[in-house]
Image 1 (cartoon, rainbow over the protein chains, first blue to last red):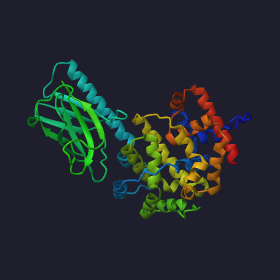
Image 2: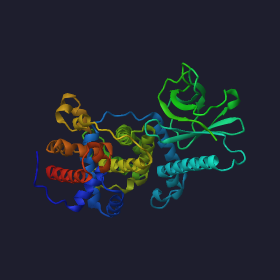
Image 3: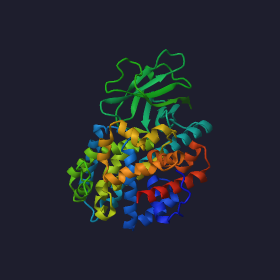
Image 4: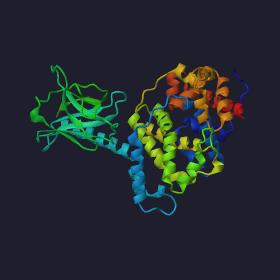
Length: 243
Length: 190
């Protein structure tokens, strides 16, 4: 049906609907949120639009929330309870909001990456400094190229796999670290990644690292791939370069 | 107000505001999967989506006392809070922008819903039976291209820029279609 008699939008209704759709620009959104905070009527309109539109996403096939998620929430609640309760709202506790602020962690990851890139660039272009990494790789998610891990080796004969952000591993699963250089028949496992730990590999046990050598992480059973070769989806992938 | 499933979103938020952790976990049982579904659809990255749902539950817990009856739909309030976290998290991920017209249009097709035999399950989730049913009806009055713009924005969380590129129309056209669609929906829903 082609309605040609649309009214001129009434600013607030228009904005509340657009706010829920997520189509306001960052500035409009920010401005609207400031007004929203002090207007019950606007909040009511937003919730009403949301309730209407929800009927669409209620039809998506539900994804089961993994069990560790509820445990994680419980742990965070425990942490919150340990903090002395602020008088009004715990949202004002800067320490907690820091630890629970996703943007902070994402920001830190980005800073880390930039740091790695900058250091890498400097190391390539400047005179070598003492105990610099000699071999480096950045592993990214295959779909969206988000950097997730950095691999580096130095003269210590160890290769380190360092996460750039929080790592979530589904229950009963593990991330397995693999490498394959040109001419190898199959990838070789370098071990399983434990949550929150930097994986260290003794490179003396490996053939010499080569330019463009492939590194990847795959999602495997908790005990590692049953076949000794990658079987699960690749979560991160990248190639190494010598410095 | 309780929903037709008997789940009392408003009551649960009120209990959370008094510090009753069981209430939050009840809400988790009821809604976590749906919230994760909505967020994952937007971010297309499940680990990141789980982070967002975690943060959403913590924020619901902390802000439950800000919810009052006058604010209307409690379920709407929960999703507004969660979707905002998801939309903010978009800044930190590069997701793929995909056109899935049939899939999206099926989401608001009453016949598809009825033939899939899911109507009862789904409408049970609706907090307000009549209002929810009529959104589907009102969407039917929109031209498919305009309807798709609205669906891409809400269901996928795409920006107007992304939608314009996806459907190969000028940004101005997409903006005006979305505005007009919202006005038409609003008029129809009243």
